[in-house]
Length: 488
Ligand SMILES: Cc1cc2nc3c(=O)[nH]c(=O)nc-3n(C[C@H](O)[C@H](O)[C@H](O)COP(=O)(O)OP(=O)(O)OC[C@H]3O[C@@H](n4cnc5c(N)ncnc54)[C@H](O)[C@@H]3O)c2cc1C
Image (cartoon, helix red, strand yellow):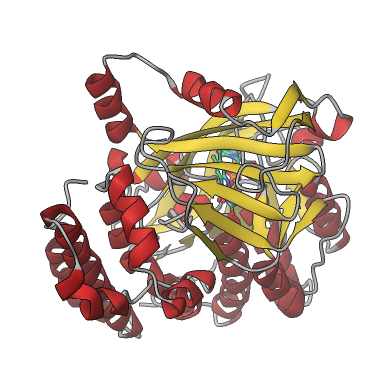
């Protein structure tokens, strides 16, 4: 079926002018040689574009250089200071006992998420993209099982705002009401399981250094602390933004947090947990929430982030999903900036192709689905299994596992954002002492085996929507087998 692209107000409407929205809009402009009419709509005023909540542009602010290069090399968008606030050599994850460190992700940047959207907006305006601010989008317009526009409300006056387009690209973030209420028949999943969301929060602090201990603060490395007492079902972080400035926070799985509260007879909330974590850091003293203009209104806040594979289908007739709206953050570390950059770049190219071929149907847009999976999405289901396994472990198991079961090759795999193979587990099996550690070894082997199966399955993602139902059925069977061993 070819969906006609009749008279519309715009060729493309990008819903949400945050990180993913602006990259996607610029990519559409780039690949169409600025020949398409593009509108970006955001609920914030232009001066605070990209703001996730009333409390700010909540993020850990870290992104790998590779992802930024991916965008720069393809669509010519470059980021530098001041939107890049600080440079790091990599990320280091510490075991709960701080005895084992694994470094991964390579060189990276700490962004200023308040400044970046202004730079992104200027890039977009230069490319002839229109930006409409202060409109809260509420729903999608549809005709004949195809999305043809958006409806929202002007913030302040509450006047109805309605615009049509050949294609709507949803970049409204994890809480997308457009996706949740998608009014047409499609393969897109509308709702996320609560256990696949992490509750997260962070401060941006300046401080003095009380003592040198690179396992707590290192201006050259983003630090991750794995610890089920500090961040149940998630992790805590200290990401440097200078020699005396850092983004400090943590994310928890709500269910694991409730269990911890029950076990310890406490009623802590997320803020208390984060405050305790900050106070327990022996290196940082005289902490102050930053009051620099570039951080004003952004030095404390909480938000949610998804930690599952991306939505099993990213396209419907006249509609596609990019970024957090599509649950793209990496299941193992909730890093969503990298995949949003990659997806936005690809989505722009494929949107232009579909519009030029006068076919914005699910079939006409299918290449976006396929190409995102080939480029990035093939590994996320395996990492989701790995995340569920990790959430089940005690601190002792994490200490033991990180010390004994990670080979050099596994660390390399983790560095490249891939699932580790845990080949050392099989070699060591007869020396492993204790039932608990043997169970851990078995679970590591299981996740590694399931990961291979899942990656293989994603490499066989159907070329056309016709093959999706069968492919999806098999995916669900593999996931059922993979998740059966874990409580989460
Ligand atoms: C505490 C925390 C720490 C994180 N740390 C990292 C990290 O260190 N590295 C990393 O890679 N990722 C991190 N992430 C994830 C990362 O922040 C997201 O993946 C990224 O911001 C996704 O960009 P996005 O444009 O898809 O969505 P968002 O950034 O959420 O942008 C959505 C935009 O759409 C607008 N919008 C929403 N609804 C509507 C509506 N109805 N109408 C109009 N406009 C609307 C919003 O106002 C916003 O401008 C973290 C997330 C959290 C919460």
